[in-house]
Length: 171
Image (cartoon, rainbow, N blue to C red; front, side, top):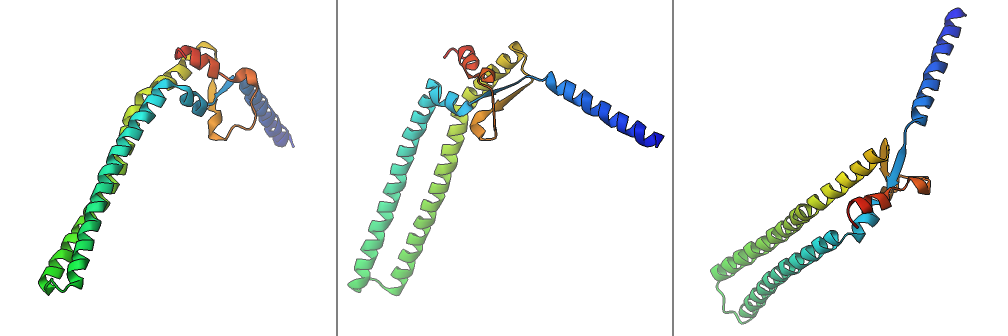
């Protein structure tokens, strides 16, 4: 009985200590999606990415149009019986090879766009993260939660540090 009482007392002390330490924690939140959407640097990066994407898409479309023309020319020659079996095999191999090149181009295009996106956004995100860290340190926040992730269930408006971070970033 004495051991049970001692164990219960220890558990109560641990819970009370945890509750006391949590009461001292200061939690703030920010909506990083809204913040980034308002930043001119992000808008500029998006514009550059869109321009790059249009250029790459045009190149891809030109490649497809060229392949389609070759296919149509080959079909027309086949209908007129102008191709030998060896010509048909050679043309089929060429068309297949070009089709694979188009697929590889498309995969590379998406990889290049993603790399460019990361290259353009990294310095912006680093700047925002530094701003968040600076505001958290200056205002005694222990934790900052991102409200744009959809995980935040409740937050007091006075704990929203978005305005402070905007000021820190000169926005």
